[in-house]
Amino acid sequence: MDSYITMVSVDGRRQLPVKEAKPILRSIDARNVYDYHKVINTLSPNVPLSDAICISYIGKNRDTRPLIADLTKRIIQKQIKLAILVYRRSFQAETIGTKAWVISNLLQADAFYDDAPDHLFSSFTLCGDSLRIFLVRSGGLSEKEVAKTSAEFSAKLTHVPSLIHHVRGDEPGARKTTMIHRLLYSNAALMARAFAVTLTGPSGNQLQNSYGETINVLHSEEGMSYIVYEKSERILFHRYYQNRKDFQDTAKDLIKYIQGPAP
Image (cartoon, rainbow, N blue to C red; front, side):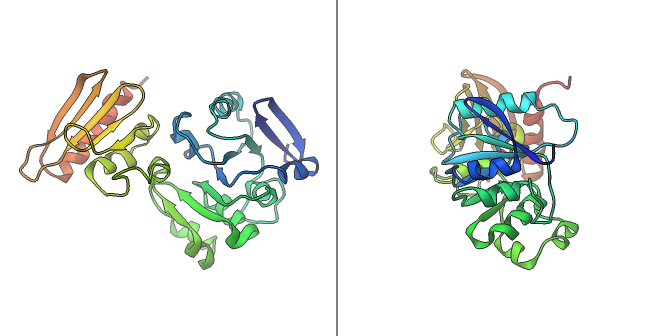
């Protein structure tokens, strides 16, 4: 399958040899390219993205049915225009059939979001300064990962700890570093619920989403700080904290509560 890519659209899935895929790729008009695993799948399908497609690397023996079903849902809801599955990956830019190869053949890709440095580095090598590259993960590159790239790549790379924070960056207050942002942007369980950041809740620091869930964090220097989680106007979690360590422990307890008991 290395010499193929798979395209997923509203019309279904289509597998193409890379030679046949090249002219089709050059007709795709999308500025923003997102990886799937740990990137776009941290967003609910109803979170809008601008002029976007998804590219996902598929390893051997992977069942792609759940992936394609989710991608199709995101296409139908117009979060992305289409999705492309590739079956090769490498730090070497000249490798045909990789994400980098696909991106270099798109009509006008402007930005690429991924959590893996090999995909980002090979894309940067092929596309140069015409492509903005974003590392989507809570931490940066390790020393071993840096050693496989270049100084030019490191200078170009933008670190995005949270995709939901990045795409919602124009919302009022979204660029401020507050306790509620720390709660939201460091927890994938909350990001996946597509909480919107607002500053208009009863505590002045609130998260809310379309499922009727609300989280309020009141942070006070006088020791009356707390986290409250509500659903359909019912308080399900209410916990006080006194300092940053207590806040971190309380946030972890909230995540465990939201995730529910382990299966």
